[in-house]
Length: 225
Length: 332
Image (cartoon, rainbow over all chains, first blue to last red; front, top):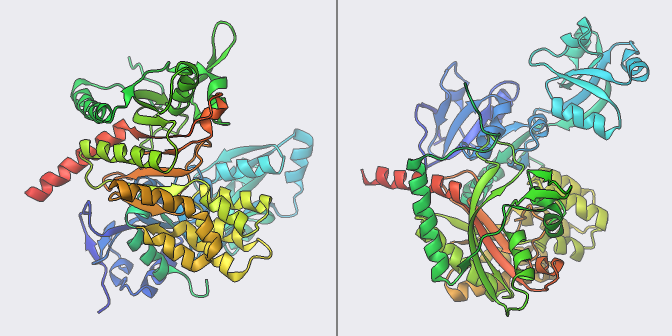
């Protein structure tokens, strides 16, 4: 019988392995990946507002992708799935990055207004460019490594707005298809990094629950990978 | 009016202090029983002393000038100050030296993540006793300390600081690629490690598979056999010292808490042989760590083999409270 996912209200302290799942862009493909491990995720796919679910072998907790390193580093979740973009931005968090899940592929890019040379122009004339981003640490590291000066402005919502209204000359953001950029008259200028979904583990769980973690890795390992 | 304390520091009130004191005195009794005399060193050292022990000042958080313009630093652990102490105050005495401490140390960590910049370490240093017997004695004291703290489920991860580096050399991986791969391993980035190993030219399939599998190999004594089965003689040579350490622990009867970990690395630069990390299921962070640093004392002018461990007192306390709570829950 396929193990079924059901809603739960309480997380047992010890007991089944706790897996943190990302709501948002990676949600659908993450559930597909869990289906392939032999789990029936119908209970997760509904419109339930519950945050905690369980099967016989796993406790599933759901959250924003950017919170996953926090929960996993503290050991509140033993393992978690999140994007490489999140891990790059929070690179100071101590978690084991143990598997590339291969889905959720996208690129971290520097983008500017289409056909508008002002990105280079401000750099030349004013000594630095203004860059809006949700990934301030990735952006700062990138400009440092490429030897350029930039004023990085952190925003929380739609980054594409910033160059349109003059908050910034360009943006550093994640693109999957590039359609959002296109629709806002922006174009990719430089590629900074590529990202896919990753399985991460808590440092202590990786040691104390080695068999369960390794078993999960084997079942989630993408075919041909 | 609010008068805050600096980030990563905090006050301790009587209820907590009473429990911390009880824990400290349990640990001190264990150290005394094993004849490790307690020492104290200054909280501040010349920054040059810390740098002599570790290139990155061992993550010291606070550095400042005194009135003469000398650069000082708050100590970030007790291992380096004790190395200095042994090389200076005890220079006319005969090793081995068995020393213990319960002391505050300071590190540049990010607060708000279960890590404090000011914290208390309780530990020992065994200086002048070589591997593997010296290591076995240190682990014996560590296990007694965990017993005394009531952490019955705590596990000691045992690895070797040079194992993976040596294996890369055995497989003929060039210096530059070797450093790149070791950086990935130190960052716990096994996906990046796979990429970096994949970029190495001229590796045969067996070497490639071994380098990818080894960092994930952890468990009881048979992991070494499994690793050798996978990678043959190069692995046999690279794991020789770890095997000797494990056998010494087994002979001493302190292998029960030990889990071998072929991918273990520690973040401070002075470790040379066996390395240790302490885990408890009640806590997501490590409770303590240690290992051998046979080349550290020599930097202070006295060439002696050495090993030791340090437990983080406040984390030990959190784990202890959690163990008690769970035991109570199970009884009910």
